[in-house]
Image (cartoon, rainbow, N blue to C red):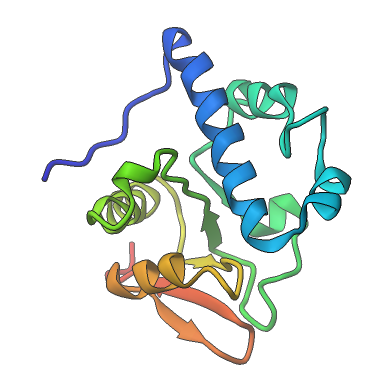
Amino acid sequence: MLVYLKLLETKDEEKFIKDNQYSFKFGAKQYFSEPEMEEQYEEPGEIIARETIYESIHRKESIAYQIMLEGETWHGSTSIEGTYSIDYLIGEEEYLGKGFGKRLIQTLIRKVFNETDAERIIVQPDKDNLPSRNTLLSAGFSYFEKDSIFIITRKIKR
């Protein structure tokens, strides 16, 4: 199975937006009742607004983001210097459970370590998202219980 990262092209944007909206709504249904879901909507009927996704597509950022530059604090006691995080999403249910997630995460790991000064990558999926948590473990991450994060470190120093 070949997995590679492809730059998002203008012709792909509409499908990408719809896939993200579908996935966010699907995920939210796992955690919220219908009345609670309505409180989560960014726009009528959608957990994540088209504009939010569109803006994320057009930001000139890396596929990973450096924790200290984002001002996030969920890294716990892990040093923020040299720490990056990744986000990932498999948009269509028919591709779940087929190994794509593991390959995607392994590809992202290589890209981050090859193209940045990252010493480590951390991820904090929802505690109830067992498929994502298991995929991180199978892709080489370790679970750091103290901070409730998954972490993988660069094997060879630059």
